[in-house]
Length: 599
Image 1 (cartoon, rainbow, N blue to C red):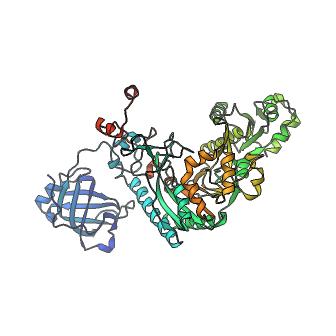
Image 2: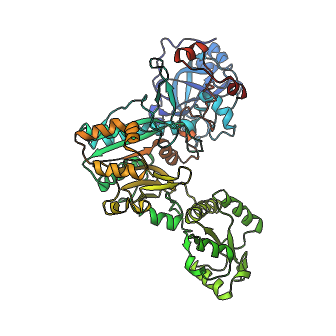
Image 3: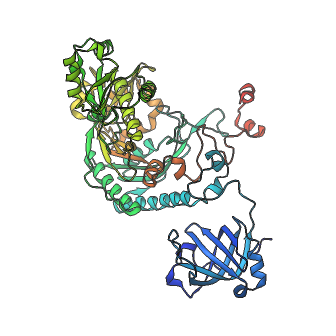
C-alpha cells in the first residue's frame, strides 16, 4: 500500500553522502536496487540518479513495525528513509562512491510498489535493445544510461555558456516551415487551415540562420531540433539535435578559431581531456588520397598508397583495365597480418564488394620473406619487388590492393582500413584525434540526376581563385567549406556563405536551377539578400554524435532519452500510428487503404 511522503523532506541524494556526514540524521529517497533479509538485519541498496547507498534496518533501532515493513521491500519499490549516517560496520565497498558509510534507518515509507520489471536494472545490460526501448522508462534508470544523459545535459550547459561569453545570441527558429527538397527527404505536416498545403519540419535551420545575419544579429546559435526522413544507421535518427551557429563579418579562420576553443573547453570540462590547439588541418584531396575518406580516422596509420605508376606496364588485366579507364590502383599495408588465413582474406574481399569494388588483389609476405599472391603469375619478379617496395612491405605484412575508378578505390580501401584496424584492436576509445578537413569540392556529380549537386548546400562560397572554372570545369571548383572530424566521425561541418548576387546566380546555374526554380525554393532568402547582406559563415555540430564519442558508446541511441529504432518507429509509444478518421477529414486527407492493409 503506497504511503505519502508528507512531513518527510529529502535532504540528500544517495551518493552525495560521505564520511563528512557521519553522525548526521538524513532523509533519502529512491528506488530499491536490491534487498537482503539476513534474519535480524535487512540490507537495502537504495538507488537514485547520483548512485547507490546502503541502508540498514535493525529491529532494535527502527522498531518492529518498520523492520517488518522493510522485510517486504522488493526491487524497484520507491521508498523514503530517515536515519543516521554511520561508518560501515562491515568491509568497505571499494566499488561504491558511498562504500565507506551506511545509513541506520529509523523511519521508512513505501511511496510506491513495483511489479517485477521485465529486465534487471543494471549497468551494461545484456537485455535485447528492442525490449529495453519498449520499456525505455526502465532502461533510463540504468546507471550507465543516466550517466550519458547527465553528461549530455552538462555538455549543453558548457556550450551555451561558452558561446554566450563569445557574444553569440541564442535564437529559436521555426519548426513549421517551407519544404525545400534539396538534400534528404522532408517530414511533411498537413495544414488544416490551408487544405492541400503542407509545412515541412526543418532539416536544419540553414535559411533562417542566414536571415538572422541579414537582420544584423551578428552571432547566433541554437541547440536546434532537426528532422530528416532518411534510411537510418547506428548513428542516424529521424530527429536529432544540432549545435547550430552563424557569424557575420568572418572568414574560415575566424569560424575555426572559435570552434577550436569551444571544443577544448567542452572536452576539458566534461571528460577532463586536453585538446591540443591548433587542431590539424588537411585538405579534402589529401584526406581522400591518404585515407580514402573525407572523415579520416587518424588514430592509426595504414594509409593508402597510390601505386598506379608502379604497375602501369604490368600484364595483370585488373590493374591495366582500371588504369586504361582513367582509374587508379591503390593499396594498404596491414602490418603483421601476412599469415592471415585465406578464409579471412576472402571475407575482406566480400567486405569491399559492398563499397562497389569488384574484388581485392593481395600479396601476403610470409615471415620467411616468401610470397603468396593472388596475381603473382601476371607479374615479373622485378615488378613484384617494385610493388612491394613501393608499399614498404616487410616479412609478415599483408598488402591489399583495389583497382577501379577513384571513387570506388577510395570508398573500398577507406572502409577496409577501418575494418582491419577494428579487427586488429587499433581503435582506442580513450584517444581523441581531431582534424579539420577543408577545401571540399563545391559540387559533386550525380549519375541519378545527371547533373552537378551542391556537396554542402547551394549557398556555399567557392574559393575565389577557382571561380574561373565554374563554367568550364565545375568539378574542379573548391569550396570554402570545412568539416570537423573526430576519430573518423564527422561531428560538424560548415562553410562560408555566398553573399554576392552574381556568384549566387552562377552557383544556381551550375546546379541546373532556372531563376524561377531558385526563386520558388529559396525566394524568401534571395529577396532578403537584396537589402544589404553581410559576409557570413557558419557551422553545425551533430550533438548526439559528439556526446556518443565523449561517452565512448557505439550508438547515438545510448545518449538520446527517447530514441527511434531503424525503421524510424518508437517502440515505447508505437509512433507512427494510425489516427482517427475525423482528424483525417479535418485535414482533407484520405489514406490509401491497400497500402495500410499491407503494413
